[in-house]
Length: 539
Image (cartoon, rainbow, N blue to C red):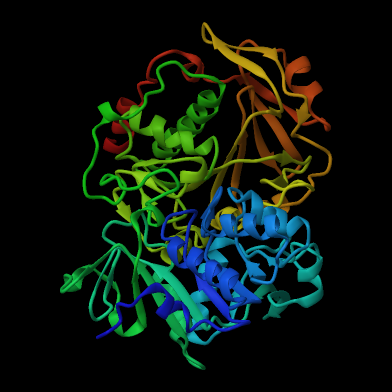
């Protein structure tokens, strides 16, 4: 009793130098009110200061939550509030990226699935050991998890190469959090917390467990929208004894995603019909890429004779879910998003991580066990650069810090990888006209290059693990082999020499069976895939 308190009473327990665990996948499950009020207390009193933040993903979006705090730190030239953080993804937080690049705070980055496992490991009192990251930029023989000079100097978090029975592994570690800032929808007066209106579960329970574990159990503060005299026991996600303080938030600081305050279809209370969703009747070049990915999924269903579960990454792969729904094959191709949703329509950009009308929502640590263990059938992820042997740089550039996100865990575990993205980058004008690809103005940035800036997918290790790997673009499809990339398909309307080979820094192997891409991906109207998959599953 007495757990429901004013926000200042709750935040008063936070001390200078504390390690604070914060939930949040972009704005989903982000306790924005607690973060903003904590920063305001620092500005008013000078305390708490020198905080170290550890997260499961990114409790922010552009100009919101931690990114807003970073923006104000830069504006005021005052960097005493946060001394460092371990954040797994910075893609939609430009001010946080600036703090890293300018070396204002020490910055570390685990893959999301490693971070979620780390919270559970802290709760269990065991180390976090995995093969995820071997042979990539996360490997301490390359960059490690250290994003700037302060991190490399202080090593508050660390990654080490270890050997177990002759096999290589990576050990990831950060200091145990003393405070947890989490979020739920409703709490009763005893502190029992539900997630009934949240878009995802995230790692809320795992963070709570890590804070409360021995030695030195800490303090958990939960942000909610509602306080009730009673909640259904079956709806409780975090039991009351694990929560010390409950703080009610103004609605503007408690949104399901960056742009959605509340939508019942996002938290699973209603299911919208196909009529409410966008179609893909007139494909542009990005839809061509996504359609080609869907065709590969359909071929996999034909091969296996059953429905499949797949992961979709951010960017063009997120379009795949819309095509799957518009083709009516979403009962056969069940898409997953790393934050926890299964099925439905994944949203993009700052709203990535939530889905319209998901069939199921898992806690994020459980979702990543699915990925790391290869329990899903395939994954489609974006790419920024591809090297001659098939290595992939997903998102890193010298002037931009994104963090690994979920990419390293997914490419490690998934048995089939369909990298999907535009063939070139930069300003371009590429159209689909009369079933043919027309390149009016091509992008000037080459993406298939001799040496990727950083390696997120190690193709050599992928081949050793027996993975099937394709690189799907609007004009060409490549396959990974032991000899390198093989060009297997080209788009109708393109000149292979001028539009493909001349726009690569290396020469791929051209298949003896080189053929045009399926013209269905370039035609107006649906591709008629439902009949194909129904026949494949019935046989």
